[in-house]
Image 1: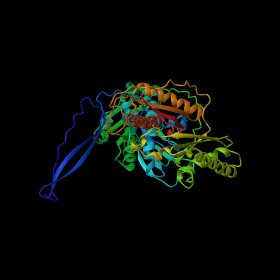
Image 2 (image 1 turned 135 degrees about the horizontal axis):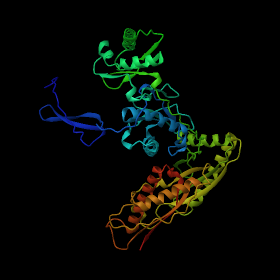
Image 3 (image 1 turned 135 degrees about the vertical axis):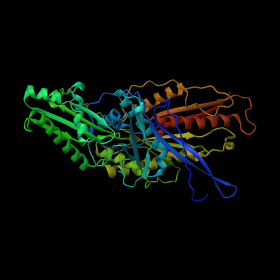
Image 4 (image 1 turned 45 degrees about the horizontal axis):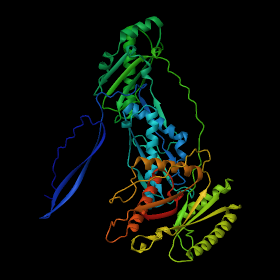
Length: 540
């Protein structure tokens, strides 16, 4: 009935299923006489093992605030920040959360100029997660201790002109967005051996002072006082987070006075002989109260570790490329954000005295005789325009390399293919700077796959193709781009009533190119740096 309510009992069996979980419950309610309305309830939780074998940690977290870190990738294929030391520092700060609470959850905010860039971000995010996960693994933490929130995509108009976006990495539970450095304070109670503790008392409710005094080993205190004549006692009270600072301070003062009075009545010692400090600022993650007391003389010295700070190894990233639909008589879209991002990066590199070569790779579909010459003339005009503009803005010369490639099917009957051939009429501008001559590469053997009638394109999961793609990625890092020739063949046996075998072979080639570029993107290689210089189809 409208405005009525119902109670639901839901159970989740956590046996042998540790870690975070998300479950949905589908509810169907009547909406009118015959219609039904569905909606879903989401249940989230974290299953913690009873026999959790965590690391031994020293003391309790008194203050824990984790500063976020920020990246501004030049392109969505930029990995230069992966080796920066502040990423390692961020992971170090998060290990405290794992040590004390068994897991950590990391949030990611991504700022973009427009929502159209969302698909390009996916490979970058995947590599970032793997990088962070690997950093935890190096420190001995299992994958089940690190979780990632779904990224928040934010549209922003305040990005730097040279950046394609901004990324913010933060602790989901202890984020301190206003801090430049994390603030972490740990108490030192674990430096006192267990058998030397003068009190270690736990309750689910705040006890009376008399109960606390009953838990203190006053006999040991008397013995220590007899031997040394004076004592420095240190104590802690761990309270749930909901208790106010006023309650904490009042309780600490009350307990300290009660201990001082009891020692005085037992031994006659004055406050100047037995100095007592009680810290009640520590937050207990459970709804419990812990009371600790020890002699400072029993505290063991802390080990001091030496750290060697590794110098920053910043590898300049490959610059943004720019690609657009192009034909003779058509102008460049020099006001688009993508072009401005590409061009500003060129100019900034020139001002940093980094020499740049620019490869103008142009693709065109052959439609009639003489069209190639028209494209060559258009390409030369474009070279003149870019050279003059660069000379004015960068105050230096720009070396431009021209490359013209005929694309698309070149056989009779290709008109039966229902493809958008405009994709193959383009200008592709590739800056050749920051590619690394020190990268060792081996020119890969041709990748070849045999297939049957139902083959539509190369299998992205094939091991041989994965290895081929990895070799191509190294070549791009070394030379700035790579040229590929693709060949697709079909048998002479008729495969389709409507399409010729050459058309079928070309469709397979077309799909294989797209899949290859997707794989390169997931290797964080800009697909514009993969140049298909020759395409052929064969019937044999």
